Structures are given as structure tokens and as C-alpha cells.
View 1 (spheres, rainbow over the protein chains, first blue to last red):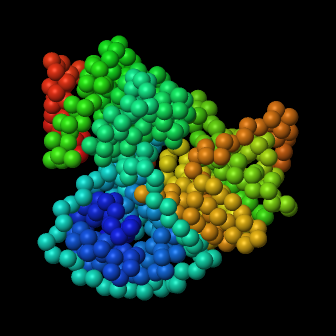
View 2: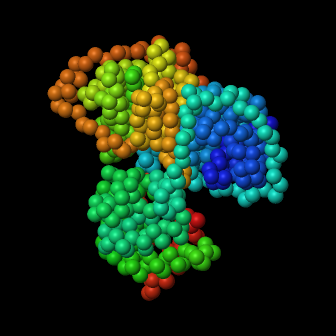
View 3: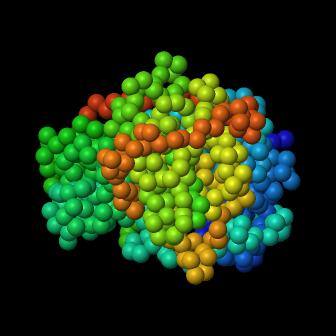
Length: 328
Length: 264
């Protein structure tokens, strides 16, 4: 009997995708029992989603929302359930909360911990082989974990979400063994939804579409944004674009901006200066669209289209929407 | 206010990574070690708080091997930290980030600081485990990826922003807190030359491995490096031939779906 505990996460009434990814990993590793833990209000729709995510049992707990998202509270609960269930593995999704929680669970539950996991398998009973990118994706580290209790925090989008189960797992309401306090948990006083488009964060996205000088003017940037939207991708930019003020500095990918290593990176109208390449070269698959066939970006890209982005982008956005069954 | 800052030496960003002969780790030969980028933000934040709260002191701590750990501690002193503590890690000591947190907790428990600052993770192993594990060991809240950290003296509360998926939480916390800071949001200062020279002679408190080792354990169960890989160099793009933009779009989508398998 090997039991895995998956700590779920609810945001604005929805179960985050990372929680489904974590259940998929638990199943893939051959757990005989997969148990979910979720902090959510009793009528929160995320509970029903998590119950159908492929769990054998779901524990739910209601905590004052001022404390609930504070890392110490879900960490305490996850460790409590892991001990109760005599589990050997706790998996958390690759969200901010997941990463904030992993180290705390490891201490509480006296376990080994690995974060940023992009692949994992069992080379033998009681042993885990874990793969994780390091150095901003410029290298990959493989680890062997031979410990009776292990906490894994996954990298966002590295794993697929299994299709929903036909039947919902039985639910059980539990009380945390310790009541959260402001001294122990801090207090969340407000939540401000991100302004503008609701796409993924640049640093976390599995797909990034970036625009460069080739976009020519800020009013043309919507072409890049529409392509990104068709792929549920984050939008990035080269330094030329952020320096010119076409987009805020937070969009910048590169040495002086963000380093990204998504599954797919599409560079639009970006020539490929070294300062940009450093920030994206570790992406798994790179597509470059540029008018200049000699642009250095084509040297690091996997697929290239030499052409005018003002013609290619609308056609590509339309084709992607069609291929994904979206007519909007 | 007593502020502790955790720092870590990491290879300079432009360093060309190589695989060690063992095949399991990075080759440390010829690496230039610097203060981790996120840690620079943590030091800056500590100094800003110190400047705004009378009577504050900043203690910088690092757990690691000679000589690079001592160097980043001196760099932190040059920036304005008051006191440096080096927890020595022998080259053969088997530890992981949880062990690092236990070593630091063993030192801090004697006189718990009001605030512990760190980078949200270091740019080398990117584990991000030390801060949360330390929070748990000290029994205080911990938050990573924090910006806009301030001290509200009238209400005796820290206030800060915590960026999560889909939005930003505004958080308040009392004294005794661990915070992992987002990189470069506070424009870290650079050290002035006279301070760099002075820092070379500054005293550094050394804590021997033997002192913390009983708290860290012997490394049983800690993850063991099995392999360190560098990406295979790319050989140039496959160029898509087309007559019309629609043809190019169809060809690219097909390649992303069938060959690269990255189409969502």
C-alpha cells in the first residue's frame, strides 16, 4: 500500500490546473491510494472539481479566508493528513503557493523535498528519480531520492491534467489540528486580480509569444497579443520594445529582463541579440518569424518563417484558433 | 529591529556551465561566484528597512564552503550589513536545502531575528526551499516572491505584496517573519570602493560545521545528484517554405502538433 497526498489549491472558486497535474503524477507513479487535501469554503465549486480529478478520497477544511492562503496553514494540513494516512509522498502543484508550502511540509513531516520537478519516475520501490531544470533552464539536474517520505513540488505545465473521473471521490470534512493565528500565518487583507488580459504570468507560462522591433509601433502590438491569446500564452517583448516604452519593462525577456524556459517560445520580429537569447534559449521549442533570413534568431530556433509578420501573424492566429476548435 | 539576511554564492549569470567529470554536478572549476541576484534584492531590502527604522541592525548569514561563502559575506558587509555569520560547510558534508535551513535555524534559534529576508530562490539550483523550511523551523510565517515590503510602525505590522496566480495578495504580518524576495524590484545599490576595502578586514563570525551538524543530520534521505546535463546545441531552424501566409500558418501548426508535440 502506497499512499500519496495531493495538496489542492482553489483560487476564486476554481481548482487550479496545477492541482490536476499533481493528481496525474501521483497516478503515474503507481500510488495505490491518492488522497486530496483542499482548503476551501464548504460550497466552493473547486471541491467538486477536485473530487473528480482522480482521487480516492478528499479531505476538505474550512479556514478563515484571511489565513487560508498563507503557506503555513495548508502546509500544516498537508502534513497532518500525510501522517494520518501514513503516506510516503506529498505532491503539490507548481504554483506560488505550492513552492511556498513544499519546504514547510518537508520540515513538519520530516521528509525530503524537491521542487521544480518536470519529470519523475520510480526506478525501484521506495526510490524516486526526479528531473528538474536548474540555472534558469540552462542545465538539467537529475536526482535520486531514497527517503521514506518525500515532498515534490511540480513545475507548472510540465505534466498533463488527467480527464475528469466519472465518479466523485468520497469527501470528508476535517479540522486543522492547529487553529491558524496572525502570528503564525500572517493575514491576507486583500486580493487584487491582475489587470488587463488574464493570460498566464510570463515567468510561469508554458507558451510565450514575444514581439520585437519588427512590430514597428505600439499600435501593432495587438497582433502579438492576439497570437498569444489564441495559444493561452504569455506575452513578452525584446528590450527594444520595452526601452521604447511600447510595453512596460515587466514584459522584457532577456539578460536584463526575465529568463523564461517555456515549452514553446515564439519570437516575432526579434532579430536575436545575445542579450535577448540569454533569456529564452533554454525554451524547449523555439519558433522565429522575421523578415531577415540572416537574423541570428534563426540560429537558435527550431522552426523559422521568413516573412512579413503583418501577413503571417493574422494567418497564424486564425489557423491556431481553427486547430484548437475556437471560432472566437 | 533585528534583521537577518540569508545569502548564497552562485555562478555569475554569464558563466559558461560545464559538467563535472563525475557527470552528476556542475564543474566548479574556474567559476566566478557572486551574490545571487535575488539575494541582492534581499540585502537591499534589509538596508532600506534599517535606514527607515532607528536602532535596526542587519546580520547577514550564509551556509557554504570556503572561499566563496566568505566572499559574498564580505560583499554584503561592503553594501552596509552590520555583521556577518559564516556557517562553514565542509566539502564532503552531504546536505540539501532542508539541511541548510536546519543549519541556519540552529544558529538563529538562540536569538530569533524580527525578520529574516532571503531571495525567493537562488539562480543556481532554484530550489526555493530554505526560506519556507526555515519559517517552519522557527515557527513563523513565510512568504516567497514578495515585493513592496514595508514596516508599519504605528500598527507594528509588516505589509507586503505576494504575487500569486491571477493576482496579488496584500499581506500583513507581525514581527518574526521569513520573506523570500522577488528579484530586482528594488534596484539594489552597488558597494562604494572604500567600503569594499574596509569589508576585506571586517570580522566574520565563523560557526564550525560540528556545531550545526547534529541539527542537520547525516544527510540520510537527502536527494542525491545523479546527473547534470546541458542542452544539446541547436543546429539551426527548419525553415518553412510557403507561397501564401495561410500555407505557412498551416505548415507551422502541423509541425508544432506532429513533430515538436508542443501544440496546446
